[in-house]
Image (cartoon, rainbow, N blue to C red; front, side, top):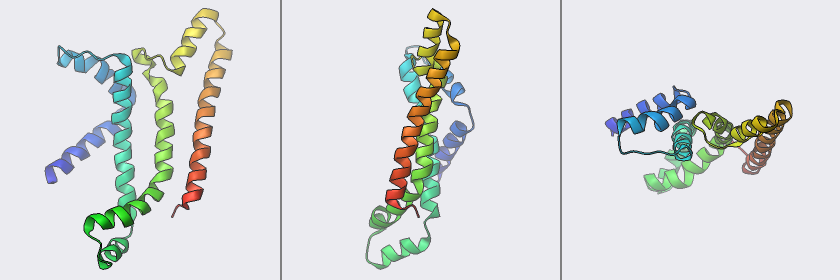
Length: 172
């Protein structure tokens, strides 16, 4: 209904309008202060943050893709005798998925790179591991270069897979 739509809209805009570092700090530090018995470890805070953050962007990607499908497709599905939900499932969503794929892939890559920001709460991800190695051997140039190469390899592989998938689905 109207209330649920507006609550969702406000939630999505708050998440999209605030930096992910602020979000993870809020979940890790502020929520336990607000709820005295709540204990959140860094990894859980990071996972919850990336899920909430990505979810807000994915919701907008999905909404945009569904709204971009011409109303004639919906009308055609209904004219063929499909119910409203069958039309959505068998006509609208397959077309929308093809349009969603590039921005969803982009969001996936952004989320992977955003994990480096979770160093602020002590999550032992790739950037944190690089920092710990540097603390032991003081070879910052080599270590940060290796970290950058690892992130680059991950994102290039994902980009390659996504391009192949896009070509296979013949994006409309």
